[in-house]
Image (cartoon, rainbow, N blue to C red; front, top):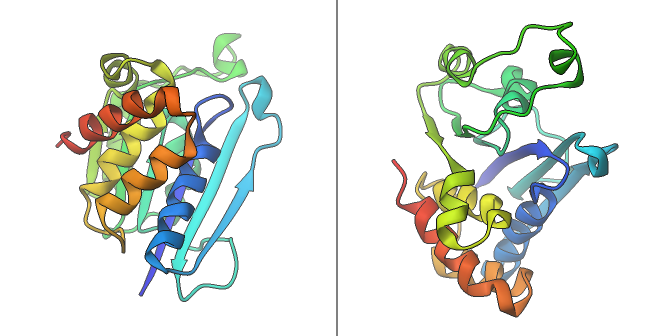
Length: 191
């Protein structure tokens, strides 16, 4: 058994916390896991990539992905070449224009254009508004857990939802546990 997951977003969206939560769930289930992080200018809203490789794996770099979680829509295109017809993509409708887009130097893409490009690679695409759902959960900071809930529906995780929920509870401060568990359930309910 081997699972390869990439989580992409921008600084402040909780990409690293989501990856470490998946890693913690693996540990609880007794599954070997390797996590990689690339987060250069993330504190200034820059690109963040985390890889989570589970099972019989030995390095953090992915060649293809079983699932891509894109907390920001444009970031999904950075993993385009790693997608196959079997890949799942969970795409947040949140779009944060790049610096060149905001300066008018590059055309601003729409979420619909990004969806069209992703569907060229895979039909296994779930698009949701994680930001709106996070607000319903009680904190916009739970956007990443909304995405983990949606990931749990794909059936590719080699551990139970209980292990993942336990990892979520342990990964956040106690006062935010309830909002995060609600966020997980809201994400899990998405089609």
